[in-house]
Image 1 (cartoon, one colour):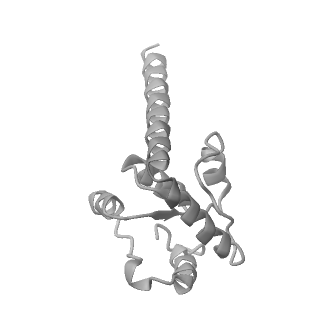
Image 2 (cartoon, one colour; image 1 turned 135 degrees about the vertical axis):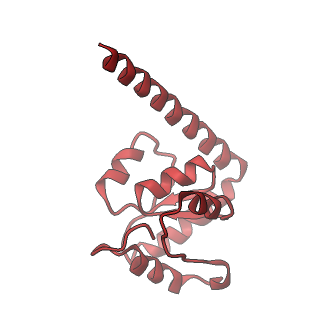
Image 3 (cartoon, helix red, strand yellow; image 1 turned 90 degrees about the vertical axis):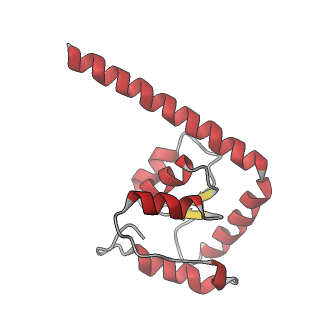
Length: 140
C-alpha cells in the first residue's frame, strides 16, 4: 500500500487477500518510501493489482502484468486512452470480477506483454515530447 491516511490501501488489500485461494503466494508489504526497493518488489512480482496511479506506472515501467483497480478518477482518466489495459470494478462485489479479469489477462501471455511494451513506449514518447516542449518554452 502506498497510502496510509483515511483512504487506507492496506485495509482494501487485506479484503482482497482474504478472498485469495493461494494466500501463501501473496505478500502485502508496508510502504517504506524506498523507490529501489519498491522497483525490486515489482520486478520480482508475478502480477500487480494497481489501485493507485503510481503503482500502475511502476508496473508498466518494469513491464509486469497489472490490472487497474481504480477508485480515484485520476487513475481512470490517465489510462482512459489505453482501453486494453485491464481494469476491474472497485467494490467488494467487484472482487469476483477482479479475479475473472486477472485470469483472462494472465491467459493473454505474450500478447499482454506486447501491449505493455507498446504502452510503455507510447507513454515514454509522449513524456519525451512534453519535456522537449517544456525546455523550448523555458528557453523563450
